[in-house]
Amino acid sequence: MAHAFARHSPVQVGLHPLWLDSDPLGGIATYWTALFEHLAAVAPSTRYTVYFNDAAAMARSNLPGVFRPRRLWPSTRWIEVPVSLPLELYRRPVDLLHAQTIAPAICPVPFVLTVNDLAWETNPEVFPPAILLRLRKLVPRSAHRARRILTVSEFTKKCLIEFYGIDERKIAVTYHGVSSIYQPVRDPAALDRLRAKYKLPERFILHVGKIQARKNLARLVAAFNSLVRQGLPHQLVLAGKPTWTSEEIFSTIESLGLSDRVILPGEVPLADLPVLYGAAEMFVFPSLAEGFGLPPLEAMACGTPVISSNATSLPEVVGDAGILVDPYDVDALARAMLEVSSSERLRRELAEKGIARAARFSNRRMAELTHAAYETAAAN
Image (cartoon, rainbow, N blue to C red; front, side, top):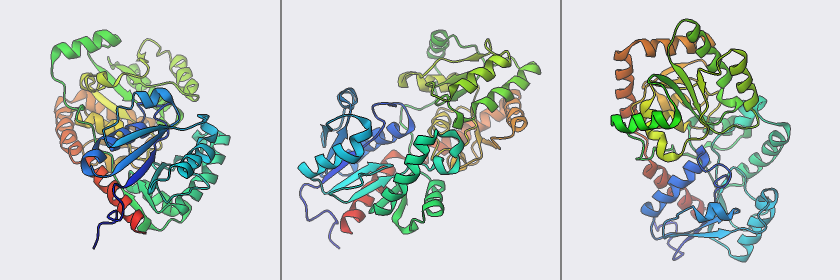
């Protein structure tokens, strides 16, 4: 059988990676950055155009040579998908578009769609009404029109079938991999420098991710509070960017009198994250809804014991390499943290299992499956 792209030389694929500008360290941006890197190695003969609406994001993208950045005009987010992108595709057509979450209603080329999660369907309570309405109207329309749909977990695939009636044969699961920067850090000097930089104690519990409702941080703070009352000496570090739903979490910290026990360093630079994971005694991720859940995978790769929610996609990521708990059960969360803090043997066992588990996830494999989806979409 002839290669699906053999009729074009070179093949042109357009990629529209939303949120690289507004959330460069978020999960979706991490997904696209890894995809750019590994697509270049997997399919070097393919040519890619990456559409940006932000000049700064375009400048820092550092794309491989087979990628050509192109700025969309005008750059207003609200008209980028419905107007700017299709106009660009009419002016300079590509063979295939790879869109994120929502594709243009009028799209002059066939497209593949990545849908990382359907949190607005599984956990609508954590979305503002306007965004909820927009996603519920536009995402299913895009999903039904897509040639292929890429998801990052079996859970999201199941949601697409259940909520939107998508044919499962049209969906490909392309798990995230973990960047090679995430490795165990044993250098005492590096760990000491990080503790000094962020004023961290010797023993602390870590969470990495946005300070938002869906991350379930109010319950994490409540569970931590019960352990503090029992004499736990640790501090809790919530590393992440504040969002519009942060106020409830900050209020919980203040009302429980934990302002001196909870450290809020904000969004930590990428270069510091492996050392931060390595310095933590444990990593806790009680999220209510995840399409994949990169932070637990990063923590496992760094050899940090992981306690995770058992909800949505997270059991697929953590497997038996961490402790899974009901995210709505504050007592269960507290018991798991106490168990890990009390047993060096358990911490060592979880660290070993985590490193082995993380090694099973590959960004190169994600890129291979993505390019295979391009081939299938082009053949159709």
